[in-house]
Length: 183
Ligand SMILES: [Zn+2]
Ligand SMILES: [Zn+2]
Image (cartoon, rainbow, N blue to C red; front, side, top):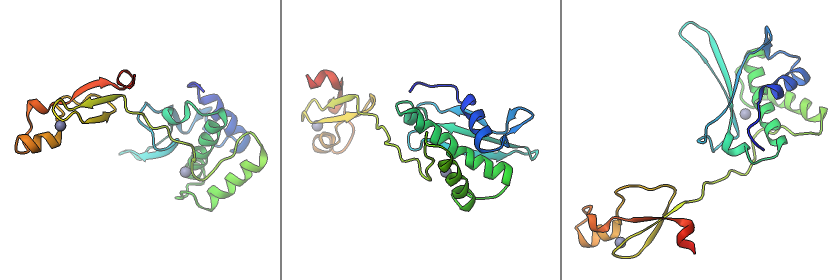
């Protein structure tokens, strides 16, 4: 799945399962966006803030790293889950996480179609970023894996053994891309 516009899906779900209650004067009452690459621990979130003037702003953020490689139904399920939160907050105006209103609406939506299933927790396999770099200590030849180059990183045990625990240039790790060193 690539990054597709979320608004048409939102409008469709809103019409089918929320009686258009998440639109106000044709405008979604909650803003929608994809996350950048950092949101890795959950597939989606709903949040709302009331500003100084008492105006409430709500948004649904969908995780690009979690959802981009999953089938379309994972996106639908996540979006719908977050829309239930928005509906509870903005329409019912109730403070509730995954309580009775959530469960009831989720059950209604799940029994109304077979395209996707809303769950209480987004149970998708989370993709872990594999390490890209291997760092080698020039003196003891021990290797460490890193996700990115950490400049100035030194071998702790060699610094301890030879330099009284102080950082020394001679223990500076040498970084190499992991794929190269595997061959
Ligand atoms: Zn939730
Ligand atoms: Zn070392």
